Length: 489
Image (cartoon, rainbow, N blue to C red; front, side, top):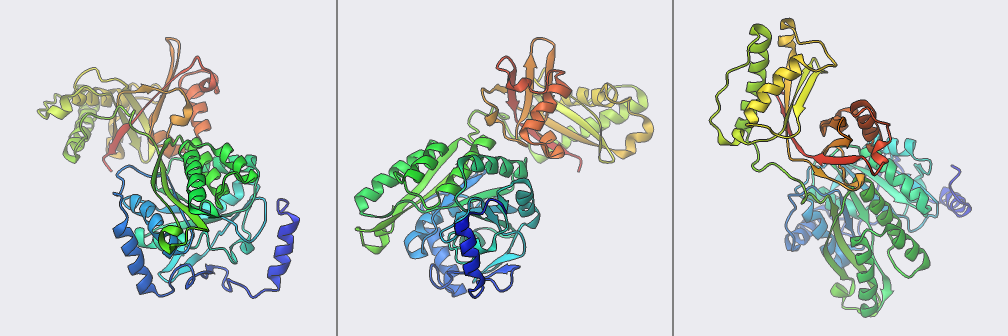
C-alpha cells in the first residue's frame, strides 16, 4: 500500500510482536469494554436506556443522513451522545457507516474493516461486507489495515449506542488517518457514489472537541468549532485543525462528512447538545469538549403535495390506470371513470409507467396538472400504452404480463446549484430554449444506480438532446420536484 508512511511501517512491525487484540480476525473483540463503558451487558443496557430517556430531544420525523457524536468514556460524554442517537432513532437504516479518527497509528488514508463483525457486551454487529469492499475498491487510499483497529476506542464506543437504538443493521467501520484534503474530497465523492440513491444509510462521525484547557477557554474554542460545522466550512476546519487553532480529535472524519454532505446537498445542521467533561467530573481546569450534531436535507422549499395520498386513493389511481389500459387496448375506447373523492380532483402532474416482466414498456406524463388528477392518470395511461415513441403500441396479448406504476408529482421549483439535488428523492427537469427539455423521475436514479453526474449527463443527452454537460452551463434551467410513487406491486 503506497500511501502508508514510514511511521506506520514502524507501527506494523511493533504490532507484529504484540499479542493480537483480535485473535479472530472476523470478529473484532472490544478494546475498551470495562474502561470507557461497563463490560456488564445488563448494566450497560440500563445505563444507555437512562441516557436516552434523559436526552432532551425529540426523535426526528425528517430522515437524518449524518450524526456527529463524542467518543469519550460514557460517564463524561454519554449524555451528550444520547441526544444524537435519540434524534435519529426513528430512522430505518440498514447500513451505518462509522467514521472515526486514529489515535494510535499514523497513516495517510482510510482503513475499512471489511468482514465479520464487531463485538460488544451487547452482542455482535455484522459488517456490511459488500459496502466495505466497494469503498476499498473505488478509493486508492482506502484499504483494510487491521493495526488501525488494534487499540482504537473512537469507533468502538459508538456501537453499544447503535445496538440500543436500532435493530437489524450492519456497520461499515472506517478508521481515518491523516490524509490530505484532496484525498478526503475524493473519499467523500466515493462515499456518495457508493450510497447512491439509498435512503437507508446513516453516517456516524466520531469526534471530541477541545482537549485539556480550562473551562472558559474550552467553551470558546468549542463554540468556534461548532459554528464552523454549522456553516459547513470543511476546508477551514481542516486547515485550522492542522494549525492547532481549532481542536477536534476527529477533525478528519468531520471534514470527510461535511464534504459528503456537500456532495449530497445536505444543508441543514442542528446542534442538539454541547458540554464538556467538567460538567460531570467537577474538574474545570482540564476539560474535554463534546457535541451532538445532526445533518440532513432542507426540504422546506419542497412544493410538496397539498394533502398526502392515502392507500385507498393510491389504489383508486392504480385501478383507473389499469382499467383504462385494458379497455382501450381491447375496445379502442377510453375508460368512462367517475370519481367523487375531492383529493383526486386536485390539479397535479402525474406519470404512468408500464413495466412488462420487469422491463420498461412505456412511460408518459404531464409535469404540471392540467385538470383533475384522476383524469390525468387516465389520459397518461392511454398515452403510455400507445404513444411512447420508444415502443410500439401495447397489444392484447401483453395485458396479462404488465404491471402499472403511477407517479404523482409536486410542483417543480428552480434550483441554482445541482448540490440541491437528492438522488432518489428528486426528479429533475433540464430546459434550454423552447424546444429542448428533458425530465427524469426520481426513481430513475434508484433503478440505474447512476452517480449524480451520470444521471445529469444522461438527462441532458438522452432526454433533452443537448450536450451531456449542458447542466454545467448557467444558461440551462434546472428544476426539481418530488414524486409520490406507487405501483400494483
